[in-house]
Length: 257
Length: 257
Image 1: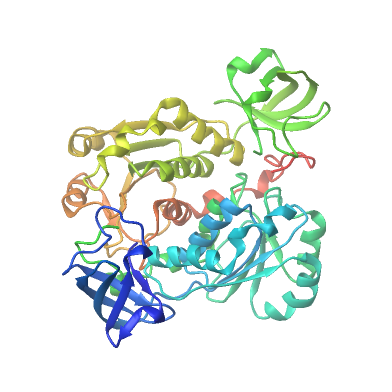
Image 2: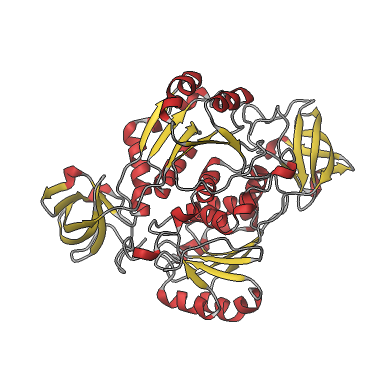
């Protein structure tokens, strides 16, 4: 946790937050906070800034703060992700939030096991928790939007064309011949298949909607490894934009990351 | 599992493997195998090729195979990794093996919790299992070497200089000003800190050994996200070398990945 992400309901007064101690598990080093402790924090979907713990009660910590700067820029990447098995979903959502993806469609595919759609991890509060964990790691505040589509074909044929107009459309497909390179400055919509990949039929449907199949090479990577690799390949500068303000996101020296 | 990684002890005769059914948990779709089932397989530290399941007994499956091609090229990257907490270690080792890293040093740092060094997950058979899982995912056969160093300073001062001669030496450090870019064709040694990062003292010691600090930008990524991003930033071509032989690593169409 590099940034404490404040919900609007935790703002007790302008510049003053009250955070339940139960919000994080007690862990040596950073929680519960000590009075005087400095923290990097941010308001959900808002600015980031610094806080100081004023008082720690039995239930809550009171934190005085100022918010004065924008969160890091978003990655111009929309992710269409065939619903992974629940354990992997949690990690992938957290990673997606970490790297700055702001829009995620969880979609069906014939190799997605039907039971995955019944997972309690798909409940909005659970999704929210994974995404918030990624933001708190990466010092971001802007929650990605997650949408679920349980039918592949109607989604691809009816929604996708208008939704991706003006976007570079790519589908990661280990069997594709075309390698992946930097995407330039535009927006990219990237589709990633389930374990076992999209079927040929699905690749063809996506192709009909303008999605070019491209590969990461001979190594077939798990989604959770492939996503950061793909993001870095598409947006190499998206991960090296620090020179101008490299102190922005650094927690105070006392913080434990 | 995209490739069945055979140990030498599983070779019953030339071209014939006997694999214990207990080796993998029974999972719908790919294990236990059915007679006639085709598999991609490879010999540990050796070639890869195709196999056909000849017979499935109560204890073992018998697989006839031919090995005819080299595993994918290694990533020219040596990883120095401050020992992460055990759960993350498992995932990072698997990812490192997936992306083709062949040499990993697990090192100490003042922000590494001492208890991590007592973890049973550091036992060689456990390390082996995580690495093998990464290879079986990525269709590779060459097991990375993992070495443990529990004392930071003697390692950095006494072993590191000779060990990294001729290698581009980088340390990932969120507070650094220099962004990361493609490494060219040479070998890279990349140091990654623990949660909370290397201390200034450690960064200075690494600097004295020729390690340049570089950053991924404003986002502070977890190790398991940062490693694939760093690898892709350093070696963009390392993940797009498929065009020449893109079928090499594809499991047969019946396989479930």
